[in-house]
Length: 172
Image (cartoon, rainbow, N blue to C red; front, side, top):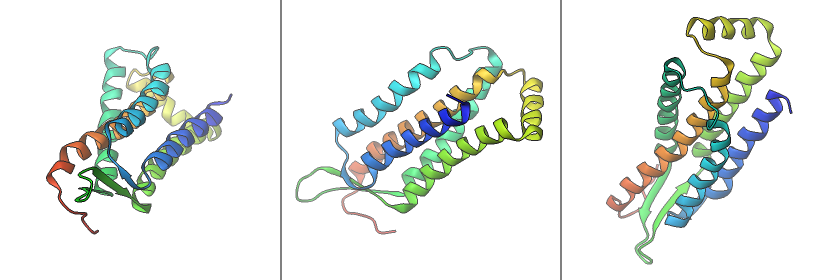
């Protein structure tokens, strides 16, 4: 499988997972939280177990976590949460703005992989930048996986912390 195909499959899978498990009005149950995080971590493990761990790679991963936190913040900001007065359950509502955040993150990955694969000048520029930062191409997949993991984990954490303080749905 080519890098581009793999990127599309993986990015599409993450996007589909978020669409199926988060879009619309949902309960924020422990099961739902663990299922979302568990699937992403399970997929991510295969990419992270052989990830380079030298100091330069770890710095790149720190950037990935930072980018993931930014997108987690955006995804959280586009998610409404409250405690249902009738059932006492924590609830969330995600709409098109949430999907747009996830679609943007996934498209950025696919476009990057496409450009590195199919645009010689971009590939050369990325290679020069990576060489100057003492990075190998082996950091690219873990970078994007850590970004996605941080998006999911950051958003879930923020919702769990925020929801008990909310008593009614907030309208955008």
